[in-house]
Length: 451
Image 1 (spheres, rainbow, N blue to C red):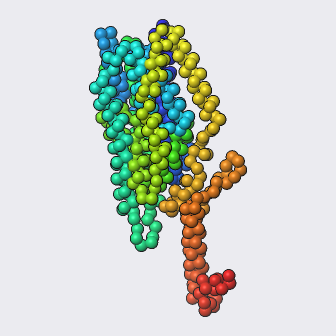
Image 2 (image 1 turned 180 degrees about the vertical axis):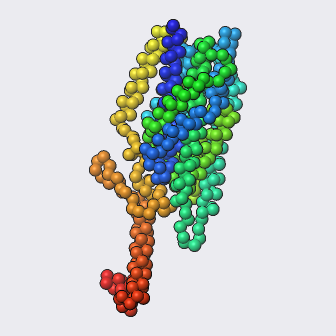
Image 3 (image 1 turned 120 degrees about the vertical axis):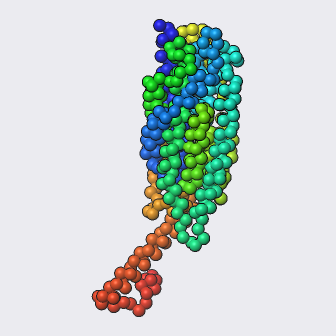
């Protein structure tokens, strides 16, 4: 009976982790299309949630890496108990919420691995960890994936700007990349569901195997797949606006062609890794792609201080979540009372983090500053009308930057020229029909004289 209760607690906590994974990683797919104005914020998170849900059903290779590879089996079965898995999940959730509070796009995946590894070491020693799987399927992809995605995004951005370069004074058409971004960001959301939802599936399956409720080496049951898919989809829909702000405008100013290059690079890397069973971090891949695209666009700048903060988060994710998981495991190892103490402390921490976040709320209305989106759109002429300025909570109106203001003036002048040409054509047609006498001076000259 006691074991059943602990297993249920682990499943509930695992699904909550899946929820935090969803809102923590929404930015991976939707930060750049929101920043360029390709998608409205609420539309973006809805689309990401649906595709995360679909993606969770496409593969279970990563789930098998976690449930049947990371933790070794001993004479009595897998070398980790449901209590220790519960403790590892606490370590992962604590790190996820701390980095979300500060808007750091850290890895939910590595937080999970760190928590499980820390808990397993406390409960069964270092021998519980399969070093080969940890190195080949987790550590090497952790280093290689963001570098690979960054290089691909850098190259793709260079190519995108090269093939759309114009020398005849006409528009380059790069604004149409905004529509392509909808497809590329959707592919990331699908890939994210394929990769990240599986990690929670793997944890629940590992728990069932450790409790002798499922045969070792088998994949996740269908109810586990459905539950994890729903949890990550609901989490994704909740937004994760703090990290969307960091990836959308904190690293570099994203333009549509550049965003498209970053998104396709991210999606390709994630899908390839999911196929190979690599449990990589979609956050690291997305961040690497955004940085690479920022370096690839001439005239753009990468905010290296923000990159340094993010890299520090990456560096400390495994050890920090591992330490929290180990402490929680030491408490949980005392039995049911220890599990209850962990649950109470974990719940108190979760409540505190959400209370603390409410003091500086970030939502769909202020995740990406209005001038940044406006300038991104005008710089590539993706809008035909005027920028709609939005009042802030203080009642002020966000000003456009100098680049956007110049673009607005150019667009106004272009519209005036089109109107003048249309008026001239109407006068010429009327004169040809003998309805009016065509003036000796051109209408443009006459208007200039009237001024």
